[in-house]
Image 1 (cartoon, one colour):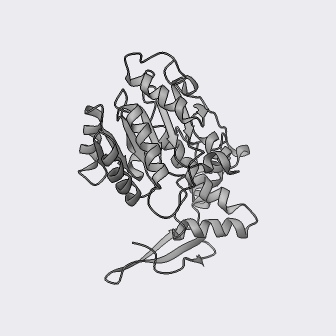
Image 2: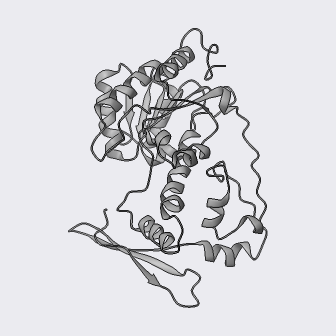
Image 3: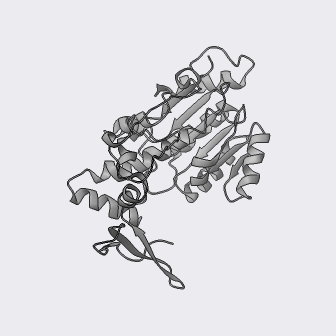
Length: 311
């Protein structure tokens, strides 16, 4: 549930490996839960794991902003204390994928999807012939956009919550012209190679919720220490999710497609460069016509020719 009190950082024992904890109350009028989480796990990882043995960490999303520094700091490590290597990808994102930022759209607000965003997504879905994975910042946003797109697009739109998630993903994979909209589980857990997934759409930059007690406490702690809490916590959180979400597109060496971000801040905000550098190096554009043309070529009889997403 939503937090019912302000998060409080409480000092641990002097010998505690956890340092400070964040304590908050969640729930509603019928049930309350006290939750406790460490402000940082860097100390315990450094002292209990990395100082005792050699460790190999592998992931497709360790380098955020093109560097390993953000993740190393989270684990209590520095670049001097370990060796890092980016071995690249077996895919060719610059030739096989497009990163489209809808710079002309209004910045997303706290309300539902704007008419401009609905129109933009409908045009993209129709150009792609369905085949769209919609990644949304909240369940409400996914449901509202699904309801809107169903009214203006001929292609089936599945929404997280309509059925068990595994069943929805199976149907999305098996029925090529189907769309699937959802939230966090889809940003990280979908593997659909082939023509069923030609378009990945992110409705907005996935910053943590402002009422997330743990994230807010970590941001405040970074600010108090003289660091940039927004970049260290909020932007890093968003960068990791966007890297994972963009990774849903190219799942085999023959995949082609588009990642579309309906949030103009990816192009206009200063932190946009950091977020873009965290994603695969797709061919970038802000031209909607170019993107819709590439999607039509992918699903039409001339698939495989004529554009960055189809060469």
